[in-house]
Image 1 (cartoon, rainbow, N blue to C red):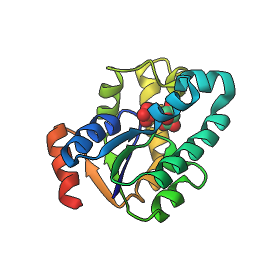
Image 2: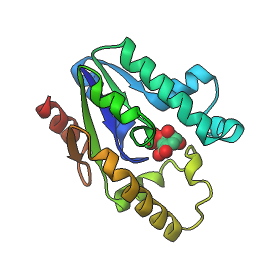
Image 3: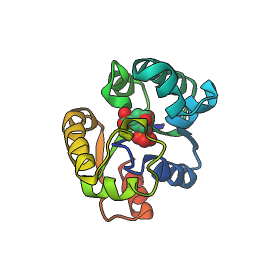
Image 4: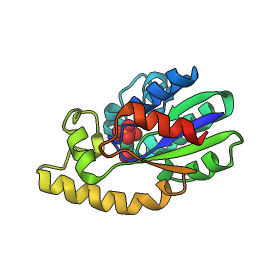
Length: 172
Ligand code: S3P
């Protein structure tokens, strides 16, 4: 089985993915980390040197690579991954994939972003907290139509990592 975790930036995909993989004794893949390793550049460097369109192209290629050459893994996507090109179709049509949307409110996302703000190129131009709230609100509105196509939605507001992992395991 390939367990795919999707959701907005800072919705806990990587953190929960690692814990879930450990529990299931599966290998863990984080798509952003995978891209960074393969390209030998950080996500921010890729955005800065080659732009978002290039990033989206390689993101699709590496997503395909991971999905076609592994089984029994947990894969945490980047926040935008299911929202571009054919990525969502690929996820939905790959045999053995079960996908989860980790749903978090704007408030939860902002408080989690405060702990790790620097590594997100899409947010560098957002200055105030007010702007951030507006940006995330609009972005979530656009992206929810994609996230909502996951097989299951897991509510993560006020939940512990352990309880989220349990919720996911119960659906498998
Ligand atoms: C992005 C989210 C990031 C990363 C890139 C673009 C997005 O991943 O893939 O900066 O479009 O939401 P995280 O969700 O892990 O921050």
